[in-house]
Length: 327
Image (cartoon, rainbow, N blue to C red; front, side):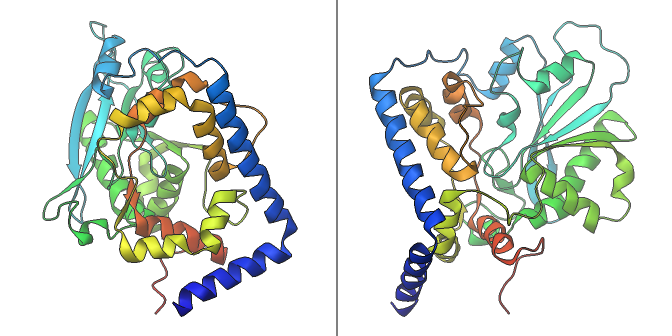
């Protein structure tokens, strides 16, 4: 009880003496309320083509080859990789440069597929002659097995992005090189996917020689300058600390697509505005809102609550460091 009172006291003090934060909260609530009103009163968007298909069905329906592979990390996590080597029936080049595409926090490999063949970067790269390998981090719905543990074991969720960089990146890299006989790969990372690459290079000697190039979308290491109203609020209330103490995983919902797609279809403005409370507000929508049901289908992977707390620790300390156990 004393700890709860202490947290609430600190929150109220911060609320009292930081008028800019109060205004951000008021503006965020008003924006979500307006978006909800717009969703109720304004016309909706049509469902995107193929929203009810699996990732494999989506890719294959567009005329591309789809393969699913697995590799095992040094610490026993079994990871799934999606490969799109080319188009069906095409005369393939004998050797193609492999591209390793790594998603961000809470996402999964579907983040690279949920638009269409004219907008998906992954498929555009296939058309340009590259061999695409899309990876899925440990603890996501596509990489949720282990040689000894299950997702029902607390020990399974004992990881953060540190282990993803230390173990997942080398395991995926070695597998791709072995399967393609290539000397190196081009690495595409989004958000936490770039963080994993930074860690892999910092903790794995000589791994850098196997990356021909690194391309980072929203690269992130230090997070002290984030503008997330929701993250700041959860931090002040120490919600990540409580989640880590009592819950093992976050947003790990294998069946979410059955429920998310209809909700995102009817309330796309509300959902996207809520997302902006996490990533920062902008006056423009940088996504076609009608595609959100596909996003719900493809792009919610899950992670550990320890991983979330690790990010909050770095925001609090200003450091890009390993998990702080407080010892």
